[in-house]
Length: 320
Image (cartoon, rainbow, N blue to C red; front, side, top):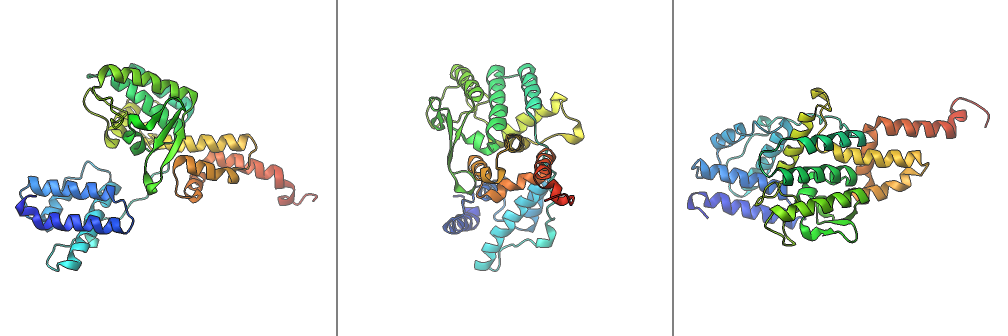
């Protein structure tokens, strides 16, 4: 522990311990505060002050607006904790931090678009380890589309989380501290086997704790790196107009849309099926899963048609 950051480091460790004692994982916030600590070290500051806070925030220009707000708010909460114990500590003004902007509506990626995207990946020019990176990106898109995993869940998968014989993936203590088993389709399982053969020829680490997705012989994809790589492929594909470019997370939305459409088309009781989808997607409750319904015109149309067939006569004043 560097002497000139001792007060900051002690406060940070106490803060994280306090948050986790309340049942919070606090992994995301910890990453933000660790990045702030690295900034203070690199810029030779003894602690956080207004000048350092402003310079640090100015360096977040590469992040989208809401991410910048989230980072600043994470630091604000930490500073509030410090101020309660040490009145002389720096505390940013809440009014100096912008508000969140409304998130863009999701653009679910269809199966047809995924097929076209895979064709683009197969022909995409990659300078280093092209076979490995191409296989990793193919697998990433396929798993995101067919399982609805979060990008972080996919990036954190290890070889030990894969059961090829059963055809399932183990998701360990993800969002909301929930773990679950996620079955793979036959096609996704086959793609996984193809990727593992390619990985074996390039990647040195084959331990159970080794990450699944690597982009070169010695480095695995991070969640951010994987998301950026898939996003670059999407942008270069020409499949979508620039003003309607889906997010990588919209592959997860596409999975939810497909499941709900399939249930409506099969005439199943969608409300009774929602808990299954919630469990599969790792939601804390079906309320989170039902959230997808409002952004799915195709699903809404199917639901409306079903309602019309069942109760149209009543609504229009027909015979009982």
